[in-house]
Length: 231
Image (cartoon, rainbow, N blue to C red; front, top):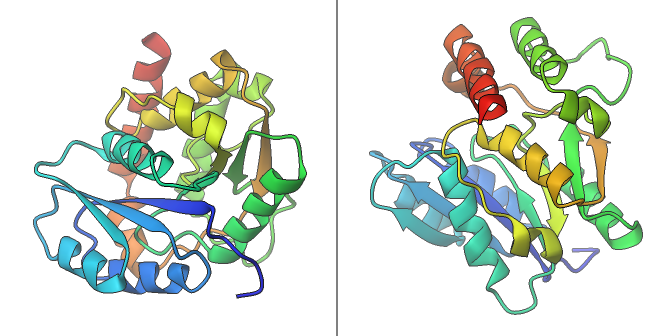
């Protein structure tokens, strides 16, 4: 490993990802040795696969939602000795380690508190994998949020985020569902965290497409965003 990431923790919410979670975590641990995966009441073998991958395992006895799993993971990671940098990282294989390396590097070298991944931070490539429906939904969410636009963010529902200890200590996610993403945007604004975006590549595998890119998922993102705005 060319760079020491002993001060960095990946936080991975997991719900019924037993098919892929061991591979995802094992690959990430080749670069980032410290990973806490929160098994959010899975009904499959996710917990056993997390344990087999060598990651730290925290269990929710029932499914509480991704926002709650992230908050549990943040609280666990920020309590670990030497922890300075934190990354929220998906369990289904969509996020890439190379992007995390760049994002943590920026936290080390720039005066930023949080780096948020974006699928729209550079000209669209011919091999862009973002499905059309997903692209429309995500751009609509940004359009509906003046706060997101004011912060200069283009992809409010990107789950890949890297942040420092200040943010980890102040993060207090209350919304359990997908609306936690909008809540984090609100915290960035209200707590004056210094924010920047980093263009990232999301891998839309057959597995992740089947789980999370359906029309109903897009509708849920929009509904949760509107709820967060009302609250």
